[in-house]
Length: 582
Figure 1 (tube, one colour):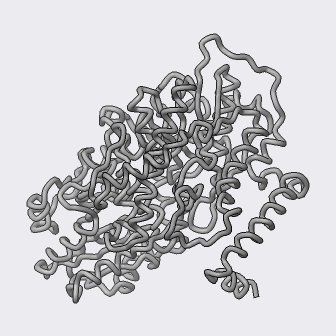
Figure 2 (cartoon, helix red, strand yellow):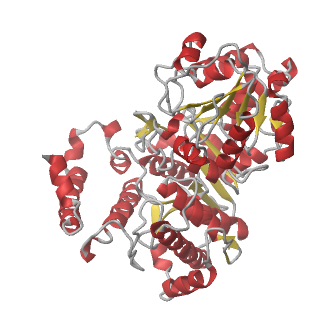
Figure 3 (cartoon, rainbow, N blue to C red):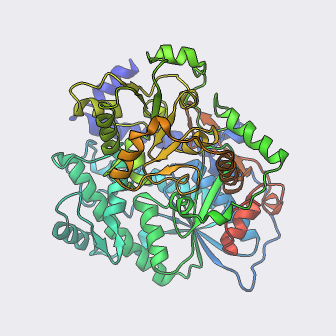
């Protein structure tokens, strides 16, 4: 009955009534939950803003003479994990004598990655959501209310960027985009910031595609809407920073529309910006200064870890963690709770010839690869895969196994551009020596690598583990394992051709190279990924949830070194020390 009711109200003509009554019910629930029902729920299962209600406040508050003005910028209020991190770290910084503010978007943009209808100005004519005018700002209000309640209960000052909007900025943005947009390939700069980069990454992230169709009106209008929002955001930030002194900015991701623009704006204006995120390893955070951690890790100098001496304890710690990846348990995401790890069973499962050498190819999700990993010899990851298949059609003595990333079907954010479908649309017939393993398959990628004479990767995090297993590793795209001394790093197609022609005869990594890979793995997993137990984030299905449970019940504990990782992050923000656990 519920499904029938929902389908009925999703009819275009009835949609406005659906959203109208949905909003009334949600507001009633939110108000009741906030004031009454939350008391019936265990503290650890409450929303972050309600957990702050139960945390005892400290009386030991004093500002330093040289206090920094620190701005925490969640922008949106839909992720409790982000609000948990930025409110807890913000309060800790405040207790250390600094001035902290939290910045909210508060309906200031026509679109964001969470809500492409945004504030409805200008109206999104191709929107798939039909609402009454009174309901246009429903999502924006919910978003801002979450941040507002966190700030109220944590007693951190809230600032709204909507208070800094110029009246004529919307029309200026529309005129600018109309003048400068011709296609998705255009590089569009506004006040020195590449707004096309951030608009494009947000569009493919929202649509869950690796590329956009120039013939699709919805994709074009959504992209243009993000360009308009990027223009407006830059002007809004400019107005905000003219009237507010800010010494440090703290934000998540450093990519997509809101935080990508913010990061570039901060760097352009010489304001130190700290970008943080959640890695795969459980209860960890990593961070970087003045860039997203994705690029910072790729560009990190090898001298940061080459001198590490791995003792028995460190080796054991690394081996235990890498071993846990086989069936999960110590990472935020576990794609294969019951993996096929037996080599013989795996070969039978995907119908391989045990007498022919196997070359494995490991993919990324298309939209994920497009955002995070630059290409070298190829236009993009799909171009590389298609080229590789064509090459292997002439290498009949070898078998190519393409392992499609399980996140395509086993993660919270999957894809609207399945890789297998894209490959099959390119080839009338897949060569007989090429096998495509679908994302839902339970075969172990690690076992597949183990039975391979070499492995090809674009930007997958698995590259490092392949090298440690002593398998020749060929890296085609940009990733943090590239340039470390344990892989074949491809720069041109000619170089790739040469590698493929002798791919079954490539030398395995030497013991010295495996040691280098282990050093870097230890550095990445246990020094750059910093243990952080200020809160726990439960696992929801195959992916990390957006909920968070605080592990402290008093503000005084935010100055206690028993909350692991908090001092490292506060020092990294205050003193601009590198985010490394030594």
